[in-house]
Amino acid sequence: MSRPPLFVDLGLDSALERGKSERKLVLVDASAAWCQPCKLMDRTTWVDPKVVARLGECAVALQVDVDAEPDVAKRLRVRAVPTIVAFRDGAEIDRI
Image (tube, rainbow, N blue to C red; front, side, top):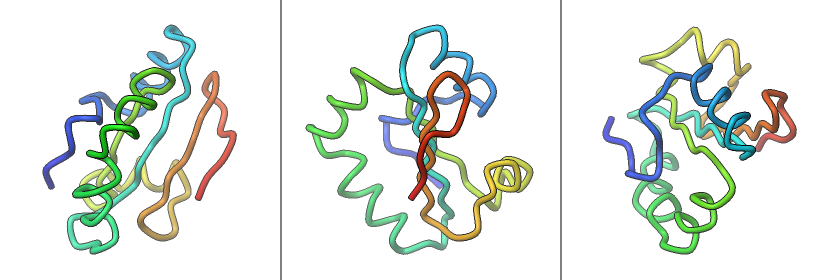
């Protein structure tokens, strides 16, 4: 699955550490190659210039393929895709 450029090429722990050190939120998009809503978000939301600019200012964005990284999906308690989880200082603060 090809990721939009918005997403960093880091593992979850590295992204959480980067978020802490840069004093930014960490936004994790749990998705799957077969997920049609995920594909739609990759083509629209995650490439929207306003979304990219805002997240670039305040967040480290990470995309996780739940099939390729089942341990991360389990750790994040992903039950359906897409699931978006926000972290601040390493702690989950919201999910949708």
